[in-house]
Each structure stands twice: as C-alpha cells, then as structure tokens.
Image (cartoon, rainbow, N blue to C red; front, side):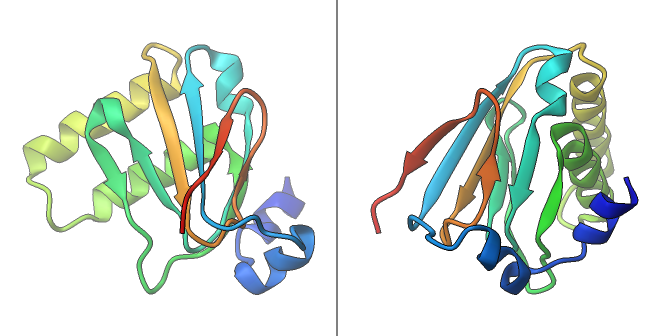
Length: 135
C-alpha cells in the first residue's frame, strides 16, 4: 500500500517510461455494476478528465492536476474530495453528488466511469473499453 501511495505523487514524466508508445488521445469507459468493478486498476495521467455521465459529473484537469495510480474506489474518493473543494457548486448540489458517489463506492448504485486523456498515457484495466480518439 505504501508503494501505491508513493506512486500517487508521480506526474507525467514518471509515467511515460511505463507507457513508451502512447497511442494518442484515448477514452476509457468502465461500467461500474458490482463491487468487483471498484477494484479495477486505474492509471490517470495529469492531463486526463474524469466523467460519470449518470451523475452529470465532469472533472477537468487543472494546472495543479497530478497523475494518479489507484483502483476505482480510490478514484471515487478523490472525486469526493474534488466535489467538496469545488467552488462552483451550490451546497445542495454538492451533497447530492457526494451521496451518489458514496452509494457507488458502497456498491448500492451503478454508473459508468469515463476517462478521457488527450496524451494517451492513462490506462484502465479490467472490463474497460478503450477507444482511440481522432486528433
């Protein structure tokens, strides 16, 4: 676990050797239907955006965005943190989104996780569908 926590602070320059031949812009789509899907491994580059369409939720990378290595459950925890820190959302909407994400983490809801990475350095394992995007 300490190793993964250490890797969470890596940025793109450290992730490039792991993926020496990026394929260009890519989209990963992962249906989250059961608790096993929460254990799917995710490598998200600092350039990637994260979406959960069913929740009308989209998190874009900012200037302080970092790469992330974790499972889907860990990514959902980061999403909760981003919602809490977000300034553009009303408190009522924040609470609604936090409740939806919590239900998803507990396996009491279903949704689709979408990661769009213009650098092509992100990776999602398991049942995720990879789609190459036109440049």
